[in-house]
Image 1 (tube, rainbow, N blue to C red):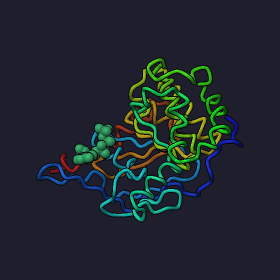
Image 2 (image 1 turned 180 degrees about the horizontal axis):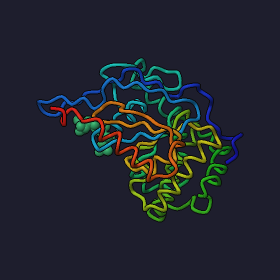
Image 3 (image 1 turned 45 degrees about the vertical axis):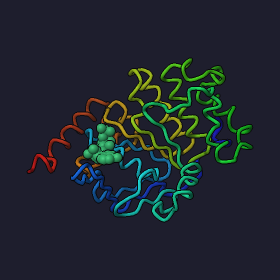
Length: 264
Ligand SMILES: Nc1ncnc2c1ncn2[C@@H]1O[C@H](COP(=O)(O)OP(=O)(O)OP(=O)(O)O)[C@@H](O)[C@H]1O
């Protein structure tokens, strides 16, 4: 895929979370999944959000995607305050500005790879873009020979590449990936990480990946660590030589701050 045919539109800060809080009711209890989170992600950044299970990573990602309404604060994505949008406008905004990649690929089993990839354009009434963008995208993601295969005839890595292509076909300002390597073996997972980093560098694409794996986070430029619904700290991956030293640092900072439960 040439950068001229598909490169992310420049938005200075694709994500600006301002004092964001999201609560969920769990029976009688109310859980604060994210609490007073403020975070800015700049154009062309590749950011990994790390944290233990339940620390609020997916809730934060869903808030960036406008998949969940906030209880407090503002989420500004591509210069648009998501809380100011009606449900219909939010859906349209998400289709156009945000690419989503999930652990379980979420491909439609009855559609071929290229039908899955082009679906977001068709549902948005922009089928006219397919001709110009599909072939370069298939080529860039190494899927040309697999374009007419259905998901069950593709490997896990190929299915995730189809899902990534689907997330890029609309030329989004922001790509959000929730545990994108979670269903893959380690070699396929590393290939997906490499691809995401290349897309970020080649196209100045802004990418946020939620992961609990240091081997994934090390591909990003910046790591945001969450604990207990808060942003605990952040660091640059360039400060660490490899995934092991990053993992050690991550474990140390998480251990150094007790959770609310541990403090009680
Ligand atoms: N829809 C929901 N209803 C009720 N509680 C929820 C809901 N979504 C998340 N939570 C709660 O919010 C907290 C944060 O969950 P979240 O899924 O964001 O964490 P996570 O860090 O992504 O975890 P994991 O790595 O296990 O996916 C947890 O206590 C979880 O139980």
